[in-house]
Length: 113
Image (cartoon, rainbow, N blue to C red):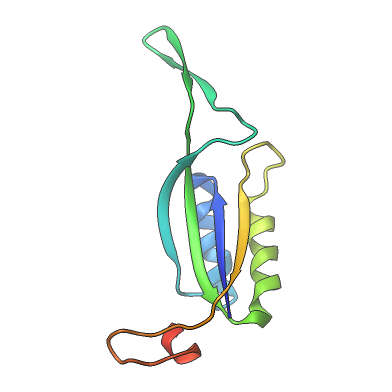
């Protein structure tokens, strides 16, 4: 099993959620995040004054899936979150050693579903 973390633009979440749902991915964890990379922030305007925004809002979408689903999920994230501009985000993939559902003590794939 693998854990996929995708850091995406917040405005792309709903279209990604719909796309993942259409391929049978139902379990997600979403975390609001802020960060900066090559974008180096952006300029903002408030009451006529320009200021530098150092950290831009992002969402971290996390899911644990079977190994055979990874490529399909990556394709969906790229297809639905791509704008071609700096700041589209990143995808991280981690191996999962074990999963345990606390309530039932189920382990492995049964604990994810």
